[in-house]
Structure formats: structure tokens, C-alpha cells
Length: 561
Image (cartoon, rainbow, N blue to C red; front, side):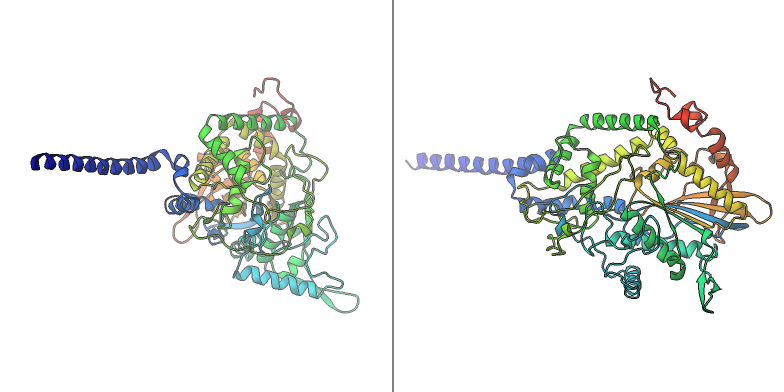
């Protein structure tokens, strides 16, 4: 009897041990499923709060590295930008910039909760104080500072409408601060060497008073007719120039994002652009996991997502969150640093402001120009999707679009489209270079443009090392030099502080000259100006089997070059 009872208890214990072992095995299996299969298939096992808490520890660092595309202000510093080269005199500078940080190009849910301001920036505070004093001293001026000089930008606001809001496609105060810092870097490097910081000569008036006067042709400024490019240009120039010279500026309008001037209409460039867009759609379809992430993020982030979203479109919306360290829409949302989401940054209704950015007479450069009407953002009152935008999906999207951008930068259609689109601006650059080397008064030229402007230019010149995705407040600088010993003129090209002169097709290898840059023995590359002159006049359309812009823009039946 006793023996039988012992056998029964032993059998029960074995059953208990089996249950315990089975439970441990199931736990390990679930953990393995999360680690190796991914959070998407495991989401149903966790609440939204637990899920985000787990991801913010393991995934936030993957997202933070993409903030470099936002061009944080602390990274806007002097690098390899020149100014002083041993045995060479700086004759002039041509600067092409992208506008600063802006609001998204599509309506994003919860955007009115995002703080797009810039706090405790000395340059920004100085600029705002200057404009406030300028406005108070003007007769009949409104409380919001505007450009009062006669011309295409008369009455354009000099600052964004709201200090903390991300208006649709509009510059933010962070964007203003970025360009103020770019201008400060330009002043440190080029201001004195170009003689642009000197006091003006005084011109006597009929009433026996004197007022400052500058040589108007020394500085040439172009901007597209968008508030974000105009405001970016004015912020940069404020930090770069003395205030009285800043007030005397004349701003010229470019009717094209490509700054094509008289060489704009180009059917072949339109054709190439359409072909590239088709390939981009096809390429995304070959990556169903990424395509699913694009649709998932877009559905949860955009107010009116289209059935088939483009990866770059969703990326733009994602960057509007990442660039301002905000939270993605989700219950108990966390931002990219793993902190709880902030309270609304502003209670002002941005729908009171009308967007005045406009299309100037059609698609003159074959580039789509967005036109917005009134901005009405009701995202604060909308109910967000119950799903969470997952950081591993965001990392996948950003990684894919970077890869896509790099792939496009190496595509022959990108090169050909760049040649066609950038012909006008390169002709303009060469013309101003010739003025600088011939003793003309022109010393500084600014083109305040867009990411596409820079993409076309770098593609036409054959520069591939830089990321095809152009960050906010990016700068491309042509520095023009004259030899101390001989009558020789050279230039160098600097992209976001990196010397890329040797990457230019007609400056590579032995076609450029390596010189001593400073006392530390650092080197700089210089390319003969005659190379770029020969390029634009003789060799520019060679890769397109054409000799002039008109023939190159004729659509090829089989697109054979």
C-alpha cells in the first residue's frame, strides 16, 4: 500500500516537472520569435506602451543616426572651406544653398503638437531683435517684419509666421537659425578676404547729409519665389554682411527651381524624369517588406495618404518628426530619444495664415512646383490610428531611401537629367567666374534654392561621393582664385565643407592642381577655370550625342545617347 502511494506521488511530480520544463521552453520560444522574426509579428503579445518601451531601448539609436539629414546646427561649422591658400588670392565666391528646416510637404497627423522652434540661439535672438527694431522704426509697418524694397519680393515676410509651428512647406525658426549659422561661417571665412565687411563710402545728399553707399554689383543674390528660400537667403546674408549693407541688397528672382534662366523648357529632361519615377516604383515593388512599411507608416502618419505612397514622400513626413525630436503617433508615444511625448508647443491656430508660395507661370524647368492654398491643419482634433509607428519600420524606410538615393545618383539617367537641368545655372556660374577674373566688381553670388537644385548641379558635374539626399541648409561653394606669381585662375568646389574638386569630371586626376592650404601642411585641390569654360562651351552635351541645348532636349525615340 505504501509502495503504491509512493509510485503515485512520483508520477505526479514528473507531470509537474514536465509542465515546468514546457513553460520555460515556450517562454524561450516566444523570446526567440521576437528577436529573430521581428516586432511586427510579435506586436499582438504586447500593449502599445510595453512595445514602445522595448523598442526605444533597442531601436532609437538606429533612427537617431538619420538626424544628420536634418543638418543639426552644431554640425554647421567650418571644415575644408578655403579662403586662404598659400600663393593664391581669393577673387570671388559663388554659393548655392538649400533652404533651412521646413514643415512637411504633406499634411501630417499631430503636426501642430510638434515644437519646430529654436531656443537659446544667440544668432537667432540677435536677428529677431534687429528685425523688431527695424519694424518699430518703419513708418506704417506691421508687427511682422517684411521686406520693404521694391522688387519681386516686396512685402515678403522675413520670419516664419509662428515661432514654434511647422507650417506646410514653410521655413521654421530652426531653419532660420541654420542659415544664420551658415552665414556666420561664410563671414568668418570669406568676409574680410572679399572686402565685404569694410565700411561703405559716404555719399553726400542735397540736404548736406551723408548716407552709406555700397557698390551694388559686388553682391548678387538670386532666390526662387518661395518664402522658405527668400527667408533663408536673408538670414544667411544678415550673418554674413554688415546690417547697413544687408539693408541695401537687391534680390533677384529665379522662376525655376533649377535656376535655368533662359534654358528651361526641355522635353527630354521631362522624359528622363518620368522614366526614373517608373523605375523607382518598380524597385519598391521588389522589396515587399519595405513597401509594407511605407504604406503602414504613411497610413498612420499622413492625413490623406494615397493608395500607393512613394518612399520619399513618407520619408519627408518622417523627417518632420525626427528633425524636431518629436513623438510618432501612438498611444503613450515616445520620441526618438525614448522620452515621453511633449505637450502641445503652441495653441495658436496656424490655419489663420495663407501660404503665399506660388507657381510662377507653370512648370518652366520640367520640375513639379507645388502650389498651396490655405493651410488648415485639424490634426489636433483628429483621432490617431490605434496602431503605432514602429521604430524598426522607420529605420527600414530611412535605410531604404538612402540606398535608393545612392542608387539614383549612380544612374545614367540622373547624370543626363542633371546635364539638361543644370545647364542654365552652370552657364550663369561660368559667366560670373569670368567677371571675377576680369576685374569686374562682382565678388559674391548667392543662389538660394532647393535640394533638387543641388542634385542637378552635382549630377551634371559628376560628383557622386555625397549623399544624393541633400540635407537642409546644405551649401555648395565655388571659390575662385588667382595665382600670386602668374596670371592663372583656378577654382575649387566645396560641398558642405568637403573638398570635392577632384570628383568633377573635367578636374579629376592630373587635370587639377594640389596646393598647400595652410601652415599645417594641409592640401587643397584647384581646377583651372579654363576647364569649366571648355566644358560648358565645347564638351557639355557630348554624353548626350548633341552639340547644343535645343538638340539635347529633343526626345530620343529609343532614348539612346
